[in-house]
Amino acid sequence: MPRMVITHDVVDIERWLKGKDERSAALGAIGADVTDFVAMDASNRVAVSATIHDMAALQALLDAPPPEVAVQMEAHGVVPPLTVYVEQ
Image (cartoon, rainbow, N blue to C red; front, side, top):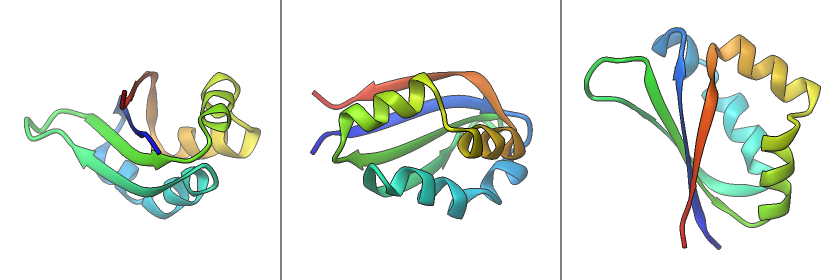
């Protein structure tokens, strides 16, 4: 199973970190080992990594997030665009 990393900016790091459980649940449907990262430079840049067992579902989630995921992203302060890296 490949690992993926998604990077993006957030409005506020603390606000984003409070959404960890919801983020893990949303990605847990298509992967495992969801891990959050924050930039060491104190910027509002973050990353999420996971081991993905359903790449098609990941692509669908990224192409058109379900309404509940879009609401969570907004509530967590996610600032598009998202950059996705996939292990090869």
